[in-house]
Length: 260
View 1: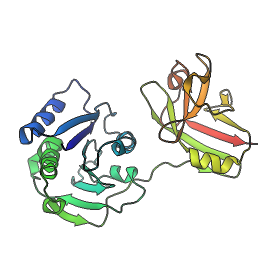
View 2: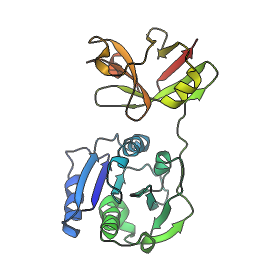
View 3: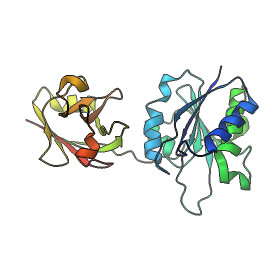
View 4: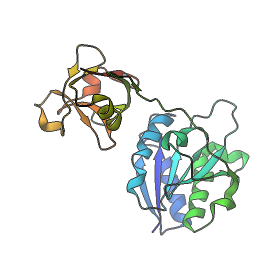
């Protein structure tokens, strides 16, 4: 059974989700449709890339992932691509979003030309992405869909800055528990730490953490903590609390790690 996933900024009270699912099942009732999320902030491609990047590898190889979030500039001619990377297919706008997901573009990239008409851009997920997904689910070749490209467009990911005794990072995602996920990776943390004690400064010198917890309940209710999450990223949380809300943390809020 082929899996087709959906990552969108439609929210659940729109009819778009039902229309796309109905069109997929009308074309192939044997596929399995999985909602990764429809709660992406409107046009927030960085958030969409983060969610899909940390989700897709848990699906079976050969899964088809539709990303219906894009931020094409005004008057920019839309271009859509299908990418095969790490055994999975990704369908979306060639606006740099897929470039945020992969360090290497060693997969196959095809500019979609089939199914593209002037009026199809109004609802590209329905009129372009669904037929492409059905084509792939039916065993069709990517190369039949359009022109093979050397690579996809890239946006530069926001990386933490590392020095001998400091890592300067920012919040890149706030989850549904209001935990603030940063762009500080476990491997770079350990590489700079070299066994030294440290202090994590959140937003200002008023909020400091000097230990990494293994779970949220290692500290008392309402206490601030830091963990490395399942994606290997430093996360600021409050046990049974809302860290982002209480500490006024949002996307791009600063988090610094000082080593002594």
